[in-house]
Amino acid sequence: MSTASLFAKTIDHYLAPIRSYLADESVSEVMVNGPEEIYVERDGELVKTPAVFDDTETYHAAINNILQFTGKSLADDEALVDARLPDGSRVHVAKSPCARHGTVMSIRKFAKSMLDLDWLMELGTLTPEAREFLEVAVTAERNILVAGGTSSGKTSLLNALSALIPRDQRLVVIEDSAELQLQQDHVISLESKAADRFGRGAVGIRELFRSSLRLRPDRIIIGEVRGGEALEMIQAMTSGHGGSMGTLHANAPLDALNRLETMALMSEVELPLSALRSQVSSAIDLIVQMSRQIGGRRLVTQITEVLPLGDHGYYQTRDLFAQQQVSDDAGGKALWLSWTGEPSSMAGRLRSEEQARVTRLTEGVFGLDGEG
Image 1 (cartoon, rainbow, N blue to C red):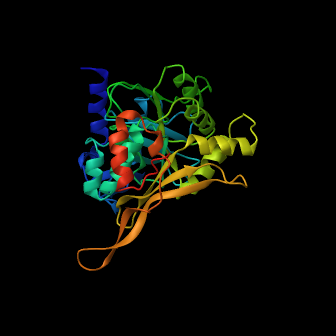
Image 2 (image 1 turned 90 degrees about the vertical axis):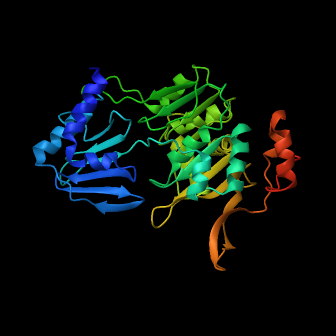
Image 3 (image 1 turned 135 degrees about the horizontal axis):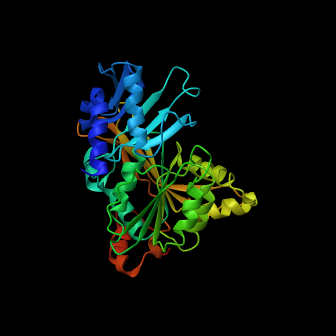
């Protein structure tokens, strides 16, 4: 029996109290606040379960077996630990002193079914017009940032967008904890590494970015921008790696640009604010805003184009798609992701093989600016 198979069987045994929830496709996350307090997120809503671990020792044994897969242990000095299950599900553990009332664990399940844009349309996440616009944007190698709050569907959308990347391109994926399921043949996956108990051997996202540039990527995909690596991402996007993508926590497109700027300032590189803002506005072409609605639905609420800096050095954006009220079949009003009527500067930059589609879009659905 292989090591991976043995580990999977061991974990299955130790996680017996929550095994059914991990197997339930309607459950996206399992949250263990303690051996006798277990919640799940099912269809977007939090539900307390009757499941319990026998005692604290059994609960800690289960966590230890999970952590061993990534060479870690509850006995380590780290109070906050990231790990994953054999199927790729992401695990986060917080223990004392950071977790004041005892060790807590959250398991973000790794989706077994691959979501594509057509499926997201069926779920109501996207409208047909917005889907087609994003398909053109990915093919045209626009740099795209997917923004949203926690559990808003950012990763799912990024996975779906990756399916539109031409198969002959080489992708380098950079993640803090492996979560993306890119639907391509030529993918190099890089994952950060924490230091050992003696503080040695750490490899952060910034180091992985520098490595990725030496691996001859056509596009760089970053699972989530969190810190000083934002500067490396910005510089990569402005130095010939068009079509790169990433996700970022932000509640609005303008907030996303300001957060990106703040994180870039966390790097050791001293850069005038005006120069940094100019790079940010040049690097990011589109921001796709995700939102988690009451009841758990995940929706694209805006698709926003980033414009050159204004006269006073501030960011400028233009909403190409936004939620607008439309009449529904019952005669009432509903929010629908619709074209705002604003032209995009993207059409004139597309490659020759996309000209037929650009012509159709320019004349009709999107009102793209064919003059570029």
